[in-house]
Length: 304
Image (cartoon, rainbow, N blue to C red; front, side):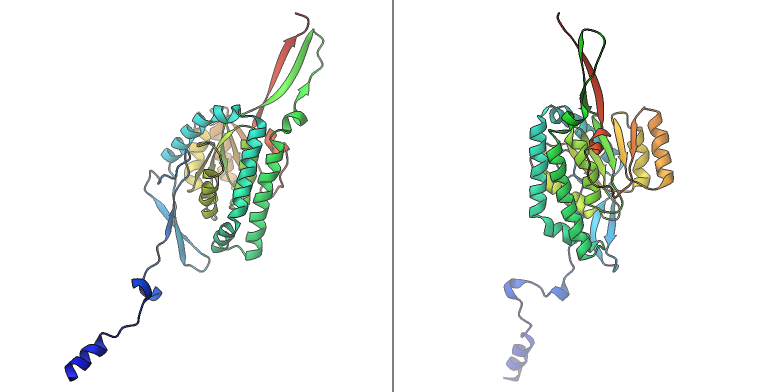
């Protein structure tokens, strides 16, 4: 009897519902944030990942460290998508940008949480997400209106109609602002794709999580594959490749580091690439669309 009693007591363990282990006895599974290239979420070719820690020191995720090859693959995807995106009607591009805002609105709680994990206050995170949503709505409205504002009919002395219209530059590489992981990325992306460009964006190193999660928004927002490609990684490694790639037509950089700005401009000279250096914090404006467009003038004869 004493043996049975001993066995019975030794089998009495804390009950755990449905076979789950107590939270204190398991290790959490950190999410590995991949890249967003060509409408898919590939792992980085380099096989390198950087651990991302909260201000408290706790690890919260693993972030892909994009390589030169990852950037090249993104350029290929962007170039393949560019003519189709530019060929869509301006009204249709506006519909798709508005759809981005709609999906982002439905997932704003997730973006707030990710920004808070990276160190933003609840108030600042909410403000940033709201600003990003409003920015997409703003540029959605300008998609079919900026031509009327910036195009012209030019007076000429000969028997011609002379028109100047805007066309997209082509493939645009973006170095997003370090502060404002979502709002800063939106401020660079939205005006560039509004006119028909396709983009490769290098996300903030400090706030990379919201960039790849934003790729999930794009994936469900009718944005054609390759129109927006998102990379995470170290800008010190990728700036030179961004500036020297021959199939990138323009670079928009919010990077404040003077050395990297200088390297970007020096490398871009060799392939006559347009470089736009912006300061973070500016509100949305249709004039930002002009930075990544080309003016095309057409002569049409009269009376022949």
